[in-house]
Length: 439
Image (cartoon, rainbow, N blue to C red; front, side, top):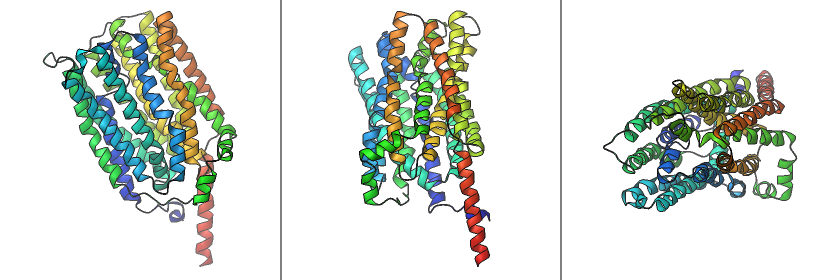
């Protein structure tokens, strides 16, 4: 009976191993050049402008999300997705090489030129990630069935974060080492990130892509206005976008936590390594816990639990701002622990939910439309920088906490896909039993 339910796609073990290894490699890479701690610290060496520091998240997210509806059109028409996948993979690797080469050539002698290099890296890396994301998700959905996806995402992200804990200690040692002055210290971190990213590119090249089931006419037809109207007319899709946008308002404050910790909390630069470790532990525990939760209750409960935990970040930072003291170090460990949780919520919660909620054959359009709309939230760091320049850290952190709590409330309007999946399993089981009885 179980075999009827648990029938696995061709090349399942091969693709599972490669997707698993690639995810572990990518998780380790992100610890060396964390967008929430290392990159803001790097930019703060080149400028003290809150607006430019806030631009970090905006540039990164716009390049990652805004092009996805266009990329969805390319993916929807394509018979094979691996060429698109590899294009994005090599773009990410090339972007990583840009920073250390430029820094060692002396570009940071001019702060403006140094900033241009950093923002070019952010734009090209995230654009490569955007090109890669849609075909990767589509292949994931076809290669790994939903009842095995939670363990793949959970354990691969968890192992990646475990290696990231070691990377966090390395970050602290490199940035706190007087023998490695700026910018050599940051250039070295990018070299470590490149080494960590290489296995991901190799794994992408070795994937065995499952065949796509749609005909050419269906692929082209879904790109018409009618296809987009179907996406926009789905009430559950609209509720998901609202919830995702509210949770994405965490970006109002996320770029400013590390600056606030040093300038207001009085923490030393070496503490950035502790923040990376705390963020990695949060992502590690989130990966394991949410992988388990996703397989048993569905990704909607990952969204609910995660959005509530993430609200702890601005609440803890608000407390440090109001009452700075010896407890600030632990408070900021909580902040970055919650940010680590958020990293797993995006993928195991929102992306995994969308893979199941989208009708078969329309995943690229659903994911592309969702990402394009969510790109509006990339202006949150700019808005946060503008708000901080005119008000205070207290107001910025307080507003962020309120919006995240609203996102938690909105998550309860989402339809659960878990019950649908269970019904499909029972139907498959019954059909398998009837076939055997017929023989």
